Amino acid sequence: MILRGFDQQSYDELFSSVHDSEISEVLGISTAEELELEKFRYKGGYSTYNLTIQFFQLVAKEDNRVLGWCGYHSWAKQHRRAEIFYMLKSDDDKRKGLMSEALGKVLEYGKTEMNLRRIEAFVATDNPASYKLVEKFGFQKEAELKFRYQFGDEVDWDFMYALILE
Image (cartoon, rainbow, N blue to C red; front, side, top):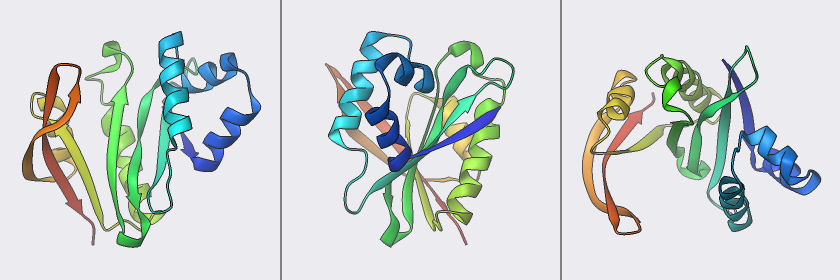
């Protein structure tokens, strides 16, 4: 697997200089709805004056297919804290160790390149594969958060995990 890094500058360059088809190809977007959602996110601004984003695209070596994403958002540089996120696009790629491989590298990047002291992970309470993944890397459960997100009529309850780096 290859990890391709994206930060605000590379994201700005992507959206300012290429056509929709190229954006879709680079980001591994397969539908018009996904593209519109990504444009909406970009226009809303991934970075603000005190929070920013750093993420990596997971790409299959054999066919250059975008497998998913892993990285940081809500990066508060002055507080040396960020929230990790990760996702695989296809269920066929799950349970193969891909996210473990990527997450290990991304956590090391957070420690060495971003100078993070605290990394947070918010994991849906009904997603045991995800919380087992963060526990594997030493994250400790700190809280259960109710009604953290709402998607239509459904609400998301999350466990809040943290990894403290020395």
